[in-house]
Length: 591
Image 1 (cartoon, rainbow, N blue to C red):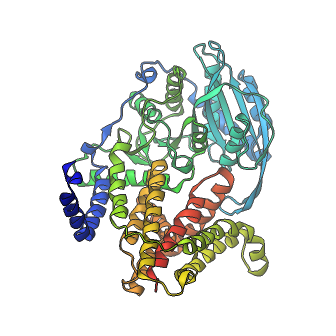
Image 2 (image 1 turned 180 degrees about the horizontal axis):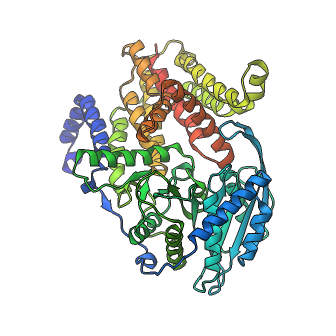
């Protein structure tokens, strides 16, 4: 405290920070990157452990016997699905009723803002079928959900068969204290969104759906099952949900505990766990796994049907069966017993999962990085923005701020609104029109703001750009800080690219080189690099042409995810991040 209260020492500290400002910023940046990369090193991580006492032991005896019968049911479901050309609603209703469930259906429809060319759909109509197993030993105020999406073609038929097999087996047990809802949803996320909105009496996306005729209690937890092969070599746990939300860590711990007990090979991000953490290859494997989680979380999109449950404060995850042609094999009976054990433990909950972490990264299923460990990496990057503030003045910066944000509003609103006009005048599809319009507005924005300071008082002044940089740096610091608290991965990736340009851009640096660097570090190029990096992490590298097409697809999916499910990544980039970047572009060309 004496250092700050003594005027002489305080002046000496300020003088040192001013004199060594640039070196300190460089050290902070590389220290933040090094801290983040060190998070994957096993001695710096925490071992996972069960925080919820009601789920602390896996000492239940799993007896599910009907794996082969479930696969036969899945083949029967596939035959009926092929026969009717979609989800066999009548067949599902009859089979669920035969298993003693209260069965209900929900129809829904949604017209997309523009065609989804990845799944070749525009006007989506479908039906969800769900059956409720009422709790025989409780007042039916709480519920658990097991879902399986009805996917096109031969995908996920085995999951529906196993769901029906578990429904029949659970029906004969007397220890259930919660309702169990068995849901088969059509059109993947759209069907799940319709069912959740109907269950909670909300309509946040403008979708048309029929009211649910039957409900269970308040949903405590949910699992979504995806199996597309009779032969399963491992089970992959998917955690990333809408807007980067994650379920309570105890749900992942429960899955891992039962995999260890039953002897099922389990993965996260499709990566097997390794024990050679002290080797270079072991560390690289952990970094790759953690970075895949960071990239998926930063995308803000739900990576499974479970992702939409999280917005309703329901802890949920997706379990994917993987056939990677390893020698190790897992049969449907074993998977059924794993799910039985998990639901029996969830059945013991006296309250919602809350005692473990909601903010974490996982380099493996047995280790995690808590928020207290990874936020300092972001803090080291964010402190650069505070160190690089310019001296405040009195010149108004309203005009550059307004024009930059109006450009962002155009980027957010016009691509969908102008798609019909673009289709009429250019030989492109609706999806291409939306994406190309967004790119055109983004590119046109580069020419708009860099001379707006002349509207203030004629020629720009030295004091003017310093005030504008002060506002832009503080704006970026608050924006990144708030983003990192909600979605650390997105905030950290944005900080890696935006903090260096925010710290060192001035009107006095070489224009051509600096403009090139600013474009390379812009949000659009960051997304492009992320697409290629993500493919490399998945060991599926692509050529530049394929990567560019994938990049355009990612943009269209981002806009669709916002319109359909309320993903906030696209409006965040268009309305806040891009206008903030334009302010630094303005500073570079200040005259």
